[in-house]
Length: 263
Picture (tube, helix red, strand yellow):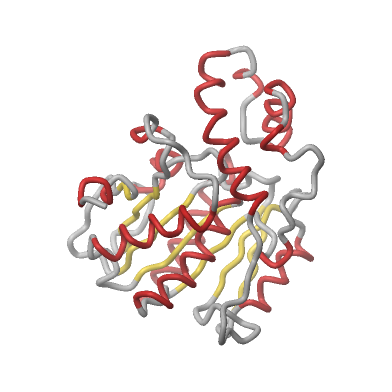
């Protein structure tokens, strides 16, 4: 893969030469690097934020979307290593589908490059060993257009007022379907030599008190996947508790956690 192709995977809207830590962020199904635009200016000066951009959306909209977690992780890992972005402490953050991507990325970076994040921060997602392809029939990725839109609005991932904006909705649906296809096809597989705790760095888990798809009782099970510390932090709101009124609370928490690690 050429250097220009690799650079498409990562978006950094503000390079901080003196940053002490890099935070790599992966969005939810159908999300993009732009999902984190507001975060850049709200992070402490010591934190340099990089958002991941998967094929099939925004500036990569002419590329085919990837439909497997492993293919996404392979592309991201190659980009981060080749671009030299792991030369200082780093943390991984993912919300919902992005949590699975970052979990597998943490494993791959350790195995292939010997790089371990200071934190794996997962959000709004049950542990990977609980994922069974969504457990729906038909799968969300195969829902008719209107039914898929209903699902997204009900989840809080799409404003009701967008329902009738046909052209805009149809622009966003293909990458959403691709990510759901990747999620539905994902299966957690222990690696040869793995013990029962495949992650060695601390895991911080964020959740919404009203998120029925990722309740506190399930989120607590992430603790069994790390040999390091585990911390669960709940916020008010549903699945998208990190948006709108809840955004600042999440950013303040993350900023404090990351800067505390540097002291």
